[in-house]
Picture (tube, rainbow, N blue to C red):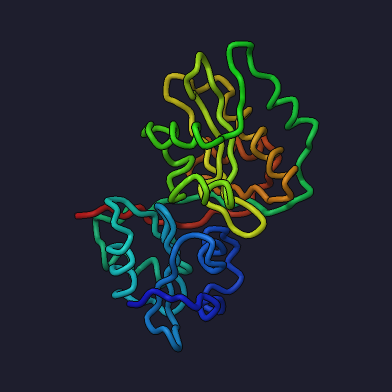
Length: 254
């Protein structure tokens, strides 16, 4: 298994897979591409944060090697097809839990800006929304519940170049936020987190609306991928249209 620096060689392997984390890797913005051969690859893995996308000819060495290179106790591995899925089950056994995720159409003109503005500005008086600056970036890094708002960025300079986000603050404390899990040329992949004791108060909806508006002002597309039905329902509330359900495997270290 080899890390591919000339990432264009892997583009045909991933084909028209509409996944922004793959685009981030192929564009050399964030993440890494691993292949079975650097000159004529037929199998590829796109690795970014907690995600690994596997494409091309199923290759057990690539799958297990990518998991090792991630250096994490937990990795969401997404197979391009059923053959890759069967290989993941064979390689990782009970360590791989099969699950479903929800994809949404990427439609830049679908958003109702007035509705989003109303949602973002409708917070109770004790809350205020603020764009993530360097100080808030560092605060997000310190708290485990909201670390994924910025965790894929090495530093604030990288975040400022390829990321954007907002947080909701109460009494000087971050209680919810929406940010770029990752960035690619022309957009971001959205991450939303709320502190457990502040959930079910509409804060995620407000933060999501605020972030989408920030992206639209910048000319970036705010892509959404849902881990569960709650996230899928929030996406619909914000204006996204459901596309399809796909299979992923949550793989844990033995």
